[in-house]
Amino acid sequence: MSYLAATDPQIADIIEKERLRQLNGLELIASENLVSRAVLEAMGSIMTNKYAEGYPGKRYYGGCEFHDMAENLARDRLKELFGAEHANVQPHSGTQANMAVYFAYMKLGEKILSMKLNQGGHLSHGSPVSFTGKFYQVAQYGVDEKTEVLDYGVVHEMARKEKPQIIVCGASAYPRTIDFKAFQEIADDVGAYCMADIAHIAGLVATGIHPTSVGVVNFTTTTTHKTLRGPRGGAIMCNAEYAQAIDKAVFPGMQGGPLMHTIAAKAVCFHEALRPSFKEYNRQIVKNAKVLAQTLMDSGLRLVSGGTDNHLMLLDLTSQGITGLEAETALGKAGITVNKNTIPNETKSPFVTSGLRIGTPAVTSRGMKDAEMREIGNYIATVIKDIRNETTIRDVRGKVEALASRFPLYPE
Ligand code: PLP
Image (cartoon, rainbow, N blue to C red; front, side, top):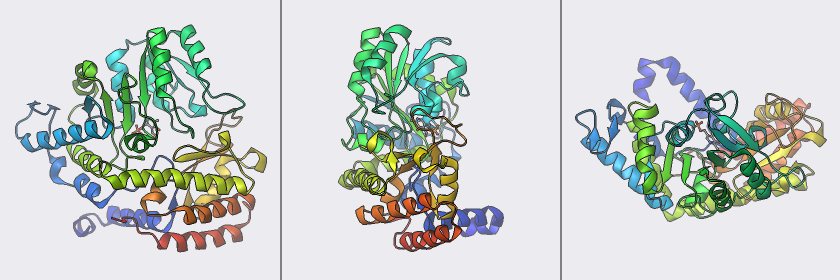
């Protein structure tokens, strides 16, 4: 980054500090990952210089021949990866991918049925503080109070009563497998569309480790930066019959020029995800999550729903007498980055919470495996159980840095 350092030493210094934070700590935020050098290079390329409003072969600007090639590659690779009939790789983010589906298939004031934010759903699924809660009516399902997993019978009953236009499934903080087929059957029964937002589990779905939603539900939306391990961005997949309306909703419906450097990086991400090693990587993400979950439970901590099927777990801190905020802060001081999270039947505000969300995609990208997950689980338990002891936290920080130093940020 020699040009940057010469031109803008302040930003260069901030980026270097952030590099060291990532290098010396353990990133356990479930929605984050570490991209490959190839993805980074495409992101930082001259593809950012071009306006390419429109779609390949139908642009509103000249000089788009190479951008057409890049976007076609991205679309074709995404279709191959998920077995989709149609793919749109232009949404700038996951929220915008969701927005495009709503705009394409709902009138303002119609109803969304989706998962409650404080039980695992996402802001863009109908929260009153998001455009979704302002433009649409919203009805929401949660998890069963006892089992803490989805009850499809309850969702079905709600769908019959609420008569939504779109049923949204998929979550930001749900550690269990989602039955997309069941959701589409419910939607079919009540004459609704079904949208699966697989942002969190896209890598698991692409590799067949989680059952797919593509071709099963009407619309699948995703981000590309979580388990898929690509640049920050969104994408939509659907059958050919919905292609035109979805493409129109993305552009010109709600975006202008696509971020072509990001689309080039998405193409690289999908290429990497098509390699056999990506399946191995996603298998290890889930294995690591299971080992970490077991280590935490063996140390006497409670996990929502008693464990995990995917890349994340939710730690319930109620019995420890501490909040998610306190745990997030103490673990942060120990070099372990996690986020406070609401849990089912939450009694505290989203700024405080009774839980922590913990995920394994980023540490798995660094090459960490079962043995390291046991170490990390023990560090987390040690800090949580002795949360006011600065000496304990400092001691754990030393061990975290020693562990992190054995694993590069870019194994490839
Ligand atoms: N959908 C789900 C399930 C998510 O978890 C997230 C982000 O965490 C999003 C959508 C939104 O993605 P973005 O932050 O790119 O808008």
